[in-house]
Length: 231
Image 1 (cartoon, rainbow, N blue to C red):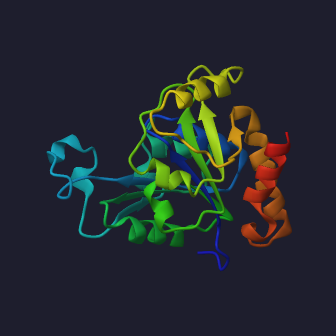
Image 2 (image 1 turned 135 degrees about the vertical axis):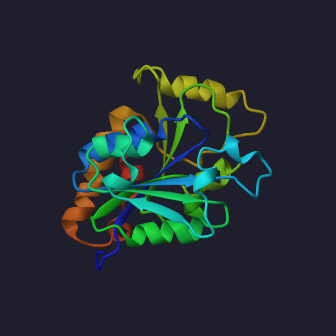
Image 3 (image 1 turned 30 degrees about the vertical axis):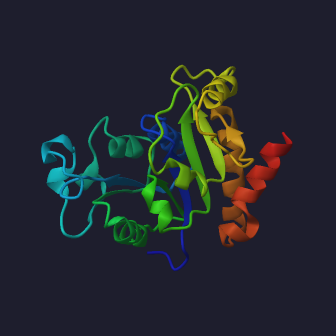
């Protein structure tokens, strides 16, 4: 493990199928040498559901299960396989139940040797401070996760993904969905990103790396917010 703590870039989702994995891959392609962590929180004894209904139920243990390295977690088309194909230096798949999230994510982070790591997941943000946290949502309708509002409070930016790769109407489609909600979704002034803004995120991260100091002291989040809010 590095003596210095790696830069932690978090990618979370307002709901399922919001393009989190696609965004992680976009970032990995532009951040050579970075690692990735996939956090999968399984439901087994705690949720009362049939274990066969959970894709990782048979992998849950009394301790967090962490599969690191290509031989341990590469499968073509699966999220971890996509991370490898996008150029990740290493990929760590963390499989936990709801009581093991903190232990699992901290163990996975201790294995990171690169300057930075991208973590896909929501619940780990209750236990780890990310240097930059992105909340993903679809431009259209989203079925919000129960944890989404809590995670949103920790976000530094809001990313809108589209199925058709068209940015032209992305923000207006999202606002139309947001205005139809029965409970207000307050973004607290977060910059709203689309795919076109990814180069700005990368540029600020690279500035932090070049300075060789802790990311928070230069301010990946504050720098991005200032630049995008002024745009």
